[in-house]
Each structure stands twice: as C-alpha cells, then as structure tokens.
Length: 381
Image (cartoon, rainbow, N blue to C red; front, top):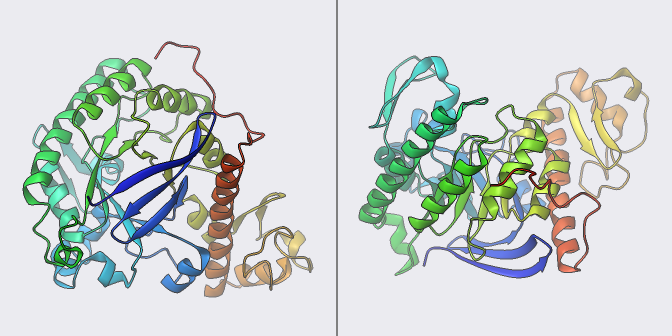
C-alpha cells in the first residue's frame, strides 16, 4: 500500500486522522501550503519543516511547462529536486487549464491549450496528465478533470460531470498499468510510491454532486476530492455542495476539498468532515501585505502601523510575532524589501497551520467549534 488512512477521533461530522505515506505521516484535518512551482514562494524548505508542514501541494501544469517533467524525472523526482523529504501532492493541471478559457479547447480526448509563458501549443489527456504526475513522483496525484464554471446550467454541468467521470476511468486505467515505472519507487521496496485520488464534480447542482460522488466511489480510489468550488459562488452554496457531497463519500477514506479558503472557512469545512485542504490565499495575501491575526485581518501597508511597536499578533508564537513589530513589518513592505515577503508569508502560513492544530485539538477533546459545523442544505441532495 502506498497510502493508508486511519480515523482517530470523531466529534459530530468532524474527525481527526492520520494519513500515512511513504514520505511520512500527516495529521488530519490538514492544510497543505501551495508550492506551485516546487516552492512555497520566498520560504525555504527548512522553515516549512520548522513550521510543521507535513505535506505540500505542487502544480503539474506549471512544472510541465517549466522546467519540464522529463527534467525533474531525470533529477530523481520532485522530492529530490526540491530537497523535500516529506509528502507531496500534485494536482492534475485541470484547474489551471480551466483558467485559460481563451487559450484552450476541450474535446473527448482531452484539452489542447496554449502556454501562458510563450504561447506554444500543448495537449493534456487523462492519460498524459497521469503520466506527467508519475514522472514528477508526488505521493498523492489527482485524476484529470474538467472544472465547471459558475454559474453553469444543469445540462452543461452534467455534460462536464460525465466527461470528468470518463476521464477518471481512463486515468485510473493508465495509472494501474504504469504506476511501477518510476525508478526511485524501488527505494520503497514492495511498497507502491504513489496513490491516485478521484475528483467529484457536478457544478452547484446537488443531485449531480450526489451522482458524481457515487459513480466516482464506484471506481474505487484510495481518496476523493471535491473540485469545482470557490469559483465565484456564494459561501452558503459552497457549504451546501460540500455537505451534499460528503454524505456520499466513504468514511474510511480521506476527503480533500480543493482550493479553499480563508482561515474561518477552513475551520468550518474541517468541522463539516473535510480532511485535506489547500489554498494560495495565505501566501498570495502575504505578498500583498494582507496578514491574518487572531484580532482579524491586517493590511500592513496602512500608515496607521508606521509607529506601532506591538507585535503583529500578540497571541501568535511564530518567529515573526516573537521578534518584529508592526512598524518594522510596515517599513519593509513600504520599502519593497524582499524580507517583507518572507516574514509575511511565514506568519500567514503559521496562522493557517495553527488554526488546523486548534481544530484537531478541539475534535480530540470532543468539543464543538463556535462556528457552525456546516450549513446544511434545505434542498434534497
């Protein structure tokens, strides 16, 4: 087995668990920092280890374009290339291709698209997306899916869902035929190096989400993701879709909600029963001077912090809050110093990781969060 999952404590819909991979164990629910290009922007790997990051997410589309899958594979795979010995998840590139709406063409065979770097033409199929991820060598890889835009009429959402299901079956077949081909997988002996997760789609239509979940589960993946959310829909609708989908996913396998959200949202989704989440928000916001604290969001660029000697967050124990003042952080940002990006990102990541740690502790104690454990739908799933 390349992956195992154990539920360790349950509180309402929420649960804590342990996701075990060949590159270490992961405490769930977990927030996965996004290292799109094989790096969490501005933060070296030893600091991520210090923060307690157990799994990173990297992006197949971007790494495929630069430096290229063959290059990374020749250098020993993504773990060795990044000098990162903990777990890695790669997405399939489906969302990035989706975001290239004017540069792509979808067919039954796959998606042709033009590179955002140089305009060159490329093609992803369910098989080639899996082949790329096998070459990258992440522990958890994702089926190639089509992300449905919002809003989408039910006919469009069904067509997209059916395409995603056909692609999932093709991708799984390819993975089963080629999963042992990576040379560095031999380092784990008889233990397989990678696991492939399926993705549930269906737009914002709860009946389609139910059907997509059931049919994806029938394909028998070791874990399941909920895709196609945080694409512009209201948060209440996001919660409805999550709740409707979770009720049809197996309780003994990990559940991954893709591409979300704010600290409040990831806490809420964890209490709904989500095990894994990722989002670019903490790192992207940090680069724009938006910092998350126990007292609310702070835009460090504001002049009101120019003479503020207090720590960024008096309740935070991270290396930034323990040493630097708001005034200094504001000065760095206003001066466009590179150090500003590093310190802001370290704090935001620490805040997100601490949020998940508090959630896990609360679940283990059998305590309910003050937040609702999810907005339950008034519509029948």
